[in-house]
View (cartoon, helix red, strand yellow):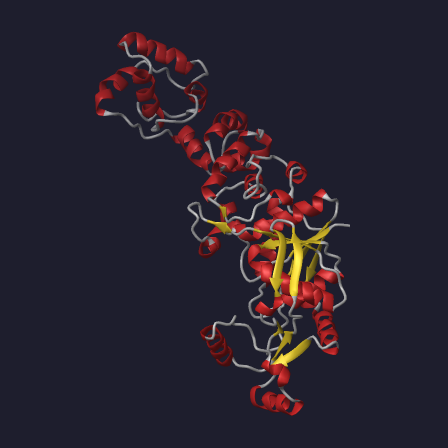
Length: 440
């Protein structure tokens, strides 16, 4: 059975970069009829917060990315300790005691000699007595995985054939000096024991994947299928990493972005398929193919989300937005006509606030100097409210006959006088909703 996972750290709110990973893993599992695991990477007790765990779940539920089960790495520390013991026993795990300053000096020396700045494995030459002395002086060391310095190869679901020389990579630290288990080993143990078959993550994890493949083999497991998606940039190709905090899913939700608009964009962005609005998850699942994604950096523009949101809203019946319309205070008998008129003129549901204020309170008229006399004369011919669907046509015909104006010179000044705007709903449809005409 196909099993995928999304493993966020609860150290902050999910952003669009996280969503890309979550969505791809979700779609792979659902298309194969498999299992999607939400795995909370909370092995860092200082930075992990329960409020972020709750926020992660809320974001995924808002998007409709429902998980089959939840796992928490903080409850599995004994499993990681067992794996560490196994690697110690087979000679693939060793303790090292260098300070950060010492490691930095080593890297600089290697770079000056034209060598790759990888850990020199000096700790492997220590005697037991020397290790005891270092523990007494510095406390516990870090634990490094001893890489087999050969080439590590796999066929990536997006990047194709990958080959990395393990000799160019430092033996990774898997357990910190304070005993904290790091992602590299925790993820491997979880993937093995939870039967994860497919792992999709960002291309910045390619080196991690290489080392994890060797760790899996050292623990007697079989590596899952890996795919590394491209990283997001801004619309001009600029680095997006520093802005991801402002692109939190909770903030996009607060700005009125609809889930299917966001999912429709993220499920196709960076692939050879065009971005097309999908109104239900089944369409996204059916059309998803990880092999259609490319390796080039992918441009993301949050502005693209709002036209998609508007198009999604245009497809909805009034029942789907009834709660919002009720909150505005729209009378029950006006709810459907108000929605049918306004849904083609909004990008988010927040835009309904201004349109209802216009209908309820009227708008400050916008009248150009050259149109003052014309508008004043026209308003004397405007019937009293309530207006009907025929009011606009009847009124403008009468104004045309009286003034000789026609076309844009007739309609635009009257629209601006009644709505304060040059654009908006069809005036014939809008007139029955207007309760106040301030231009009078």
